[in-house]
Image (cartoon, rainbow, N blue to C red; front, side):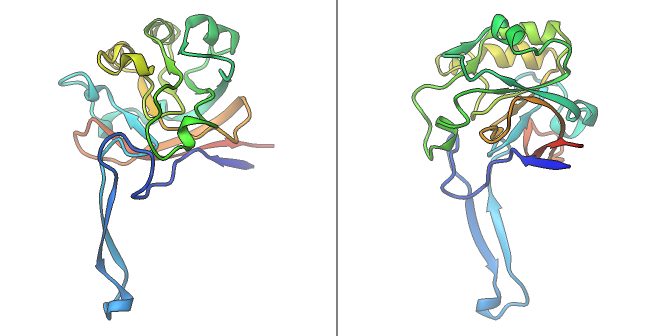
Length: 210
């Protein structure tokens, strides 16, 4: 068995949308306390995380009620490293996405913008036409390798988020696929069970078995 950890490390200097995580030392052995204890202040969408339908749809399913079956099981890492700009339906078809319920798109983001400490000016995103294609083909979870699935030209309108989350498709963002070869895997993605939350940070791994 080989495990690929596709989770970004969480720390105060990490790539982050808006306010970065903060860490407070509550107790420490160095100060004579019985143990080391820290308190972290971070958002639900910190690092590698899952967007629940409630992120963009009032009254929709929050993260603690989404189906584990959508986040655990066979998945494809689709090679979209040749895509510039927005991922389109023809890119998904060429990458062999059809027939898969859990899809992770490996783009040039993984080796580029995802490795930078600050938000890039441009990155590869999933267009609304491709998002509708995913809905029409029964995809339950779509993963991408940047802070947001949206293309950088759509972060005012959030077109793809509306298409996907209104259809109940979960969105995994900030998946680090740099060291993961395209192909078929077993995905295990377990977001924190934050009650009634719009999303949650997650530990996500891809597994291959002999």
